[in-house]
Image (cartoon, rainbow, N blue to C red; front, side, top):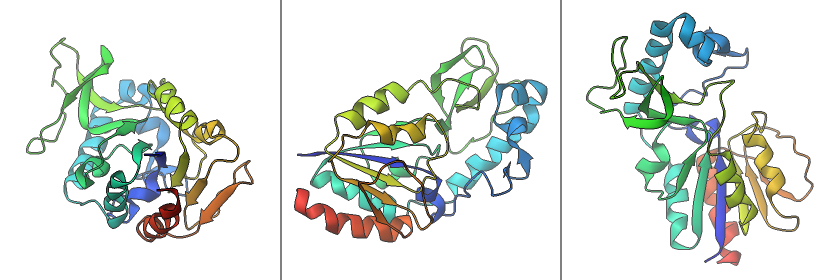
Length: 230
């Protein structure tokens, strides 16, 4: 089987009803990024940050994977598929995909302020993290999210998958957030590269096949175009 690596961003989950988190005015759910997505914001107002992610976690529990997520899972019949996602939701998992790298963390997990690399699952029936909730190491629990200013521990693993891929697909990302945006540069020249997005996405490559539509329709078109590589 050929290796198919897929990088997904916010547009992948938008059709499921997950808001794209960062709006055109630069605010996240009416909050400046610095307030809710940085270590400094958490130190200044931990309750605000915990409430922000508690809301997003409850929102996630109310939505389902869309046809795009399901379509990517179905590609595992024909390819060795690895998904690298900038999204913190678990919709790829729930759709049935087997190999997923979460670059920016996972909403349904928590970690200790003392050790942000060790994750603890959050039960759907009790999805909130509150002030005073402690990890086994005694540290306050916080979202298992890679905030701005923090290292992206899985980026090196993601680079290796892109470098060894036969086909690369990019879905629903503006390619503006680094280091994830730089992954495109590790695809070999001459290998098939597809980019699915209804909006114009600027890249420094001239060998990309664009599919200018949303994720669900785009994955259907992609599936047809990939048949010649099976």
